[in-house]
View: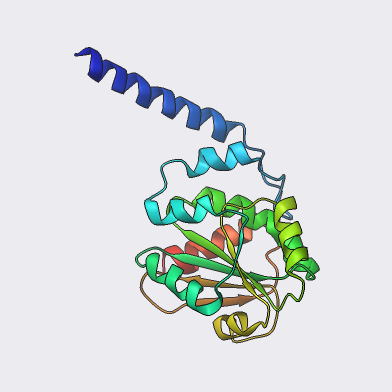
Length: 196
């Protein structure tokens, strides 16, 4: 074995060990709620090696993006071929804030094969939304939808929270209401986004 090949093998083994240690140190989620919040380092370990379109989402994690419906549609087009989970939320919505722990955990666990996107819908105070996102890190961006038009068009409802599962092939599935646990969100990601 050449020295170069030996170094490559050692680098791969070191990366595998780092991922294994990081995953082993993740706090276990409880049956209710999302469980313990993940730290930034834990999220990065879970998302390491994501394909470029998904890595681009992770690079904007926790950012509130402008651009409305056209920017959102462009992002969906860039994610063609990947399952997408869109969470409609608002900073004034208590159930939305309560389910963020589940979305933080599940988006990190599935983020190497599923795209997660938020829509901050019908939120009159952008500053409140930005402050909330800074206090609770997630691995994906949200689009600011002050009028609520994008959220209404996407979910066919003014209800918040709502989640849309868009499989690579097939019709989207809209779920109204809060995700009380990461386990329930995982089941729906598997059912509607990955196996639709």
